[in-house]
Image (cartoon, rainbow, N blue to C red; front, side, top):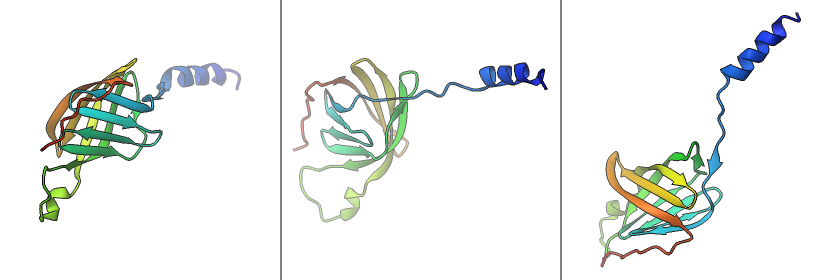
Amino acid sequence: MVKIYPLLFVIIAFGCKDESFDRIQTGKWGGEHARLDVAETSWYVEFDCAHLEVNQPVLVQDGKFNSPAMYTQEYPVQFDDESLYIPKPSRVFGTVRNKEMILNVEVEDQEFGTFTLIYDEEAKIYKCA
């Protein structure tokens, strides 16, 4: 039985991956055409003519993140067609290092855009008119 312990130690020490995750700094992140508000359990992203919601904590591993989201298009006028306002499945992914984030957004598997955001910076958003 004593000989099993060293083998068990080797299996545990080298067979398990380090799955350490971090969280994005809560608060506001701003950049050109995008503002991100990070809470403990959700994200809200405001764009020029759209917004996006992530309704779960976004975890970061090795500076990278990837999370499902819901995207809603906005318009300068109100339309009667309610289908225009139905949220669409989307995804946010990117990298974060110190106070800088590269935020990539895909909507229904199509590239929406890439945004550079800085923690505690004011966003420059130009609402659709």
